[in-house]
Image 1 (spheres, helix red, strand yellow):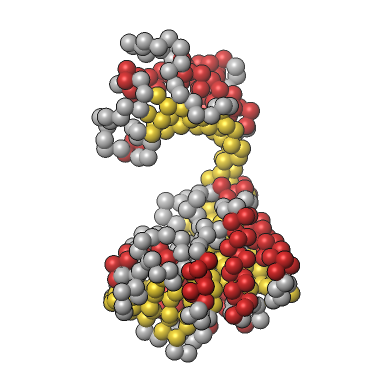
Image 2: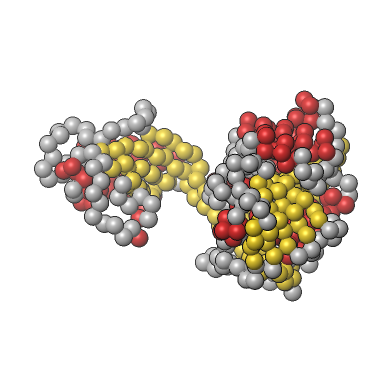
Length: 453
């Protein structure tokens, strides 16, 4: 096949896109519609909790438009990493929305649901066979880490998507997957080479981010034998050689080497040329298959329970000696919490001071801040919510009332934006599995379930 046209609607399912952009994209007769559904960017909470990243309302709006467009045109709708983290709860939540939209709008189609959440016994088997290795800065995986994980997902490549299409699926909802994999699957299945197919997916995974101005909008990519042509469907945006080259650096340790399931996309020799004032052609990308097929494993475990509080000050006397003031607050919290039975090693107390060093912490090079006001985020993590709440309450009182030299205000000198000021946040999670598993079969860990909707 000479050209395969891919349409991406947005950077993530539920981020939204202009309906006019979708209509403009459909007028160009794409061969498929897709959107990325998730990421590890928002942190481990969603994988650990099983909750979706975006609201059901927002996802349903996007899905209604995409499903209607795909069914009207008779082309596949393909979504990876459903619900944010791509575990079973996230996948089921998105599948339920699709079924609901189908009932409401009268659609009939064959749905494939591809599961990426892994049984822990399968992970242990891989470990014992020596087929799991840790990534940089991650410790080796052991049984304890596997047992504590709330859930573990494997990041699928394009093969499960292609298999689902071969089996007759018209709509594909997948669990955790490599961001470009859904598009790479459709293009390679249409007999296009893997290098431009993967690169097309790389451009499409974030919607119109490869265009100026950046925004959540639709992007078209034509995959051809020796490259791709990308362009936004919104006339207010345009792709330039700089914008497309810039996006190719996105989320990679190397600007030119992109490790994917089953191989490496090498963009060292890529060239970018303007086709017109809004479209760009990319060429020169290369694909090198790995000797051993690998997928990334992601898992999250519960780290405790969190409670937070926000306040702010514009007291110049306090701001001028803020470090010693915070040290006094921390000392008072430790003494008072210990008095009601909570020792310092039973919780973590963190102050993030916005206007001083909240973003970079100890790495902040600007130490002499000229700020006239500071915002303080106080966070407590403990083994249970009651303890976290109790320590936060003591921290709030001491942030408000601890004395300091030259203090003129004898009562509270903090402004609180909320009442109640203390916010219990519930469980907090951390990534515990960030490893790579070797596969004998790239389809084996991913269960494909078909149904008539």
